Image (cartoon, rainbow, N blue to C red; front, side, top):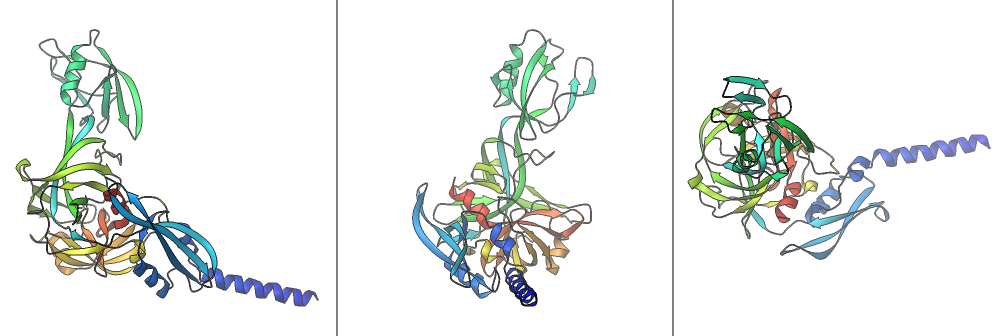
Length: 404
């Protein structure tokens, strides 16, 4: 009797092992709610046994309204053996529209919400001394002085002018947390109080346009946040602009030196506004398309179920015109939360490797194409190996572009 019981237990264990080993449990568990998908992706996922040999998925939909646009949401149901539901996930259907594919470099300028500390040294002009500031550091954002809001540099002078004892209370943001400290002021040669710090109320840089929605001209770019340069803190902004820019030089990437695209832009070449600075890029609306996007290059957006390890392409204008270059998607990460490191990619294109050495600063936002769809954007380079880098799923970006 015990022998039969042991055989039965072993048999059950073997069946359970076969089932578990053929089900992509991590893939199912880490899928976020409200990711983007369409029927083609569901069909392909089933054909490829994306979630294991014994699991298939089905899609049921319904219509909702997001802002001024109608979009479709529904539910993806994971079924064991095709009929036993094991998991349900709320989803949104990918828009049935093409987008203009980016790849062109853009200049950007953001007005910060407060005053950004650029250097943590204090300059005492009256004594010609430069000291290390013991309180404020480079990257801090000053938001209030003596409870007066600081929105631009002029607000600092006004707040300091009203100080009578040579001290002020400063509220500032560091590492996404609010801090407050009393700071001693410095008198200049005319007897006026100064902070003695180098601060600014804007930040500028260069990146790459990812996509533009054809019907609204809303765009996504960069694929990662504009930060203060000292940490991953997202710079809070009040407004911003993007510009067409010209590539003047390429510093090739090498080991421990990521390289960069050197571009110039002028404010007269404004192409649109920046309304959001997020973890997965900047977003806004273009005023005009000429000089910033190739209107003959269009594609559909692909959700994360479109993405799999294997051959792909990126679009970049490092040669002077937007071209497609071969890459390999090494890994498509499982992500339950929004993150700008969704994919691990490797540049394999000989022409691109000769031009740039791989991925360089300024290429962030370059569209990643797989099977003719925009499935993501380049975000970061591996400092130890410029041929490799990270990318972000396009549906993380689409969510931000729709909810502007």
